[in-house]
Structures are given as C-alpha cells and as structure tokens.
Length: 179
Image (cartoon, rainbow, N blue to C red; front, side):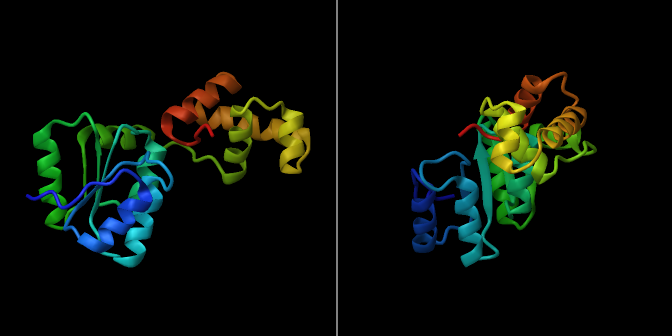
C-alpha cells in the first residue's frame, strides 16, 4: 500500500482525488468547509465507482446509514485497530462493502426503529436550538398544536422521556447536529 495524498478539508479531498485517482480513499466526516459526506458525494458524482471508506469518530447509526446510502464502501471508527483498517482497505479494494463489527452493532441495534420524518427532524433541530413550541411553530409556519403532536411522535419513536432526552438521543445517533 502506498499513501497517495492527504487532505485537511472536503474541498481539498475532491481536488486531490481528481488529481491522484487513488484506488481507495479514507474520508473523515468532520472536516472544515465541505464535510466528508458531501466530499464523497462529489467524488462519486465524478467517478461513480470510487471506493471510499469513512474513517471517523462519528458512529451514530443515522450517520452510518447516510454514508452507506451515499455510496461509502466501508465505515470504520477511528479507534479501529491497525489490522482492522488494513483488512478493510484490502476488502474494499477487492470490491466488497465492509463495516466494522462496532458499526454493524450500531446498525443492528436501530434497524427496526421507526424513522423520524423530515418534518419531525425539522422540529427536533429547532427544539435542540432551545426554541419553545410556539417559536418552532412560527419558524416552520405550523401551529403550536402541530408542533406538540410532532414532539409527541418524536418522543415515541426515539423512546425518549422528554424533549431534552430526545435531543440527546438524536445527537448521539447522528439524526441531528448542533449548528
């Protein structure tokens, strides 16, 4: 194996991929400017069969699913042992999709969970920012009763006790991010 290049931002990763055309790319999700998911999507638009492994500290099931749906060929936590990283690179290079056992457990744990709708995620994102139901409704152009109904659905789907617990769960799983 040969390290073809290294980048510090998503935009730079897209540029370097075009210039270097590596067989396998390791991509973090959190980078300045363009994040790793958007960089991978941009790379795969140009080269649909590009093999990208997400190597990150972010192991929330929603983040994993987004990355795999966007075309990631592998997903590893940064605390993976070196042998696991090497095995994953070789496996992805050979054309297989690979996730670490830790990632597989996260996916399996939430595989049967009810998914939040886009509208519920919008509400939860505004709740996470500290907005009251009335303010959430005003910002989304919906009634306060609609916000309350969506919050009730969110609590049920996430198995949360209250709004704060729902936000904590959603952040941990990567359903929402703080801006």
